[in-house]
Amino acid sequence: MLEARKISVNYDEREAVTDVSLRADAGKLIAIIGPNGAGKSTVLRALNGSVSVNRGEVMLDERRIDSYARRAVARQIAVVAQEADLRFPVTVMEFVLGGRYAWSNAWGWETERDIEIARSVLRESALEDFADRLMNELSGGERQRVILARALATEAKILLLDEPTANLDLAHQATMLTLVRARCDRGDTAAVVVTHDVNLAAEFADEVMLLEKGRIVEVGPPREVLTPELLGRVFDLRVLVDAHPISGAPRITPVHERQR
Ligand code: ADP
Image 1 (cartoon, rainbow, N blue to C red):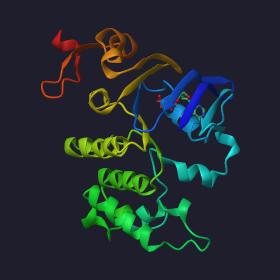
Image 2 (cartoon, rainbow, N blue to C red):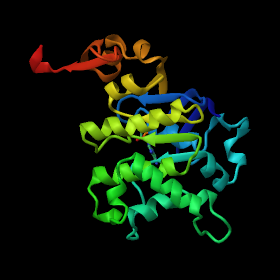
Image 3 (spheres, rainbow, N blue to C red):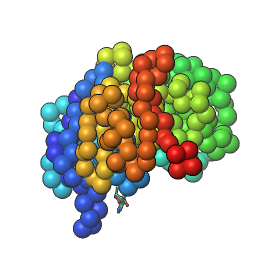
Image 4 (tube, helix red, strand yellow):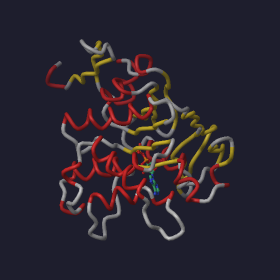
């Protein structure tokens, strides 16, 4: 289990995150929303120990995250950041197998089991036909789907995803979060997802954290956080909130100036 206890993060003199607490329990999907610069990515970086906290602490299974070796953290936490390092021409299969690295044997060779896991994740993600394609010859959205597949292939118990659906078409946005949701529903995985898509957060998250200027404005179930008052104030935009006709989840519709 991963927990942030009242963490603050500074870049130089400036505090980017202040007093943020979060518990990513197995089975739970937490969405972090908020305007640009609110500190969402910084919270994710602190959660996987890639930036250090100035106050508070990040605990992984009751031990401070900075007391683990990087590889031990990588076995437990898979991160999908905004951009992947693609300097070398690798195939989709090779890239997804790279997700098994934290588990690899002393020689760095993949085992039969690694290959089996990579194949099954590619199947789940509807990417089988891409296995032999080169990563740098895919569209942005296709590449993003492969990057998530690699994170799923790690079998890490904690997934930290930074805008995983940003370049995806409507169908693939839903598929992506359905895959993450399914991992959480299996009961052994927790996911923290930074997203600009409040409707996807409403549909898929157990808990939504709304950040503004580095602080938590509200955190709780989608219907308690995704209200016209809170969203209107934080995003400085009029929004309507009703219920999705099928799922019943809050449905957020912005009202633009010319519609008023
Ligand atoms: P969000 O993900 O919500 O858009 P970020 O966590 O990226 O916000 O950024 C929070 C604040 O920290 C912003 O003011 C941003 O300019 C600043 N910031 C982010 N990364 C760095 C960095 N590497 N160095 C200095 N300031 C940064």
